[in-house]
Length: 155
Image (cartoon, rainbow, N blue to C red):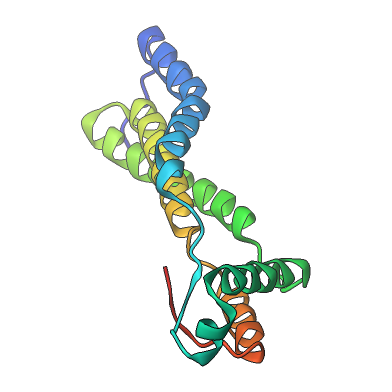
C-alpha cells in the first residue's frame, strides 16, 4: 500500500473542491432546467378531440395530470435524484481515490472523483426526472381514456 501524502497545497485544493460542489451542482441544474419541461400525453385526433376542441382537450389533460399528482401513487422522483447524486459521488470518490493512489495522490483523486461523480449523478437525475413515473403515466392515460381520449405517446 502506498503511503498517503497530504501536502498543504493538496489540502487546500480538496477543501476548495468540496466547497465548490454545491455551486457546481446549482450551475448544472440551471443549465439543464430551461429545456426540461415535464412530458405530456399526446392525444390521437379522434371524434372526442374534434368535438371538444383543443382547449377543452388540454384542460382535460391538465385535470388528469393534477388528479394523478393529488392521488398518492408513492412516487419519489426528487428523492431518487438526491439518492443517485450521493451514490454517484461515492462511486466517483472511490474511483478517484483508486486512480489517485496509483498516481501518488489519493486524496486529490478522491475529491475530484467525488465532485465529478456527484455532478454527473445530479445532472443525469435532472434530465431523467422529465420522464413521468410509469404509475403516473398509466393513471393519466386511464383518466383520459375514461373521458374518451386516446393517448398515443408522451412528448
